Image 1 (cartoon, rainbow, N blue to C red):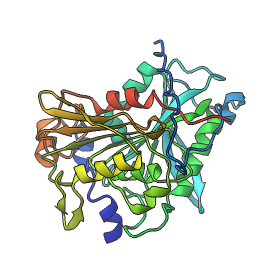
Image 2 (image 1 turned 90 degrees about the horizontal axis):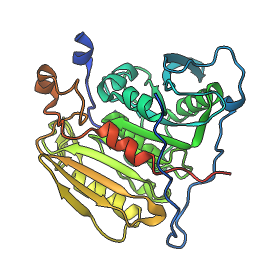
Image 3 (image 1 turned 60 degrees about the vertical axis):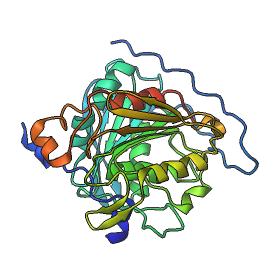
Length: 336
């Protein structure tokens, strides 16, 4: 447990939130793949269509409706949520955002906090919300020499089931998460066998030497300077030590072989740093929220006063959900 929490200490607790009671926009063209330093790994090609593109299953998910589906992993039945946008048409592959909830939270609450369903309906992508076994993800320990995790079988099963049920584009699949869910996203970014084209996180950023074996990872990340759960400047996180966020982001910049930058933009309460001259065009975007707490930027839920007293302030000057989609839509994995 100690090692697990060092990967992702004390994530979003949204029991408080639970107690309270079109035409798809064309995606931007994917970035061309640039040259890389010799020996730098590249993502493996994937299919551009999933088996669900030719499925005639009468039980297939219905467009515009949230569906709870289940998979069986190691004899245990586990659920996940799948939503297709109202504009979904069988046979036409669409991109997908997989969004991971934080410790103490649930898949339902992750969708509530991020409002990712609204973005998905507007922009024509599917949403998958996995559910931890309980409310805690099983993550690799600190000193691991591999990014293999007990969750791999579940995530593989979820993606396989979703790709068989609906017409998804495996080359345009993206991972995002809050706190411990952000840790899950970084674990995926560290995998040498890449299954997501880009990654987005809020409130936990991690880098380990094992990540060196992975290809450059397009990454967008948000962290509040006033986060009292996972301190921005590193140090004690409820009894566990975390690295300063800028240090971790510098490690990802180095991992992506970014040659210059960052370009810095300062607005009312957000400082944005963008490293764009990177190997394989794997850009790194880093948003620092002045006074921001352990919250999802732009969330109307965590901005409620009685939530903020527990989690800290939520900025409403930016939307992490919208910015993530703008970032994600520029990337896709190479196709077979």
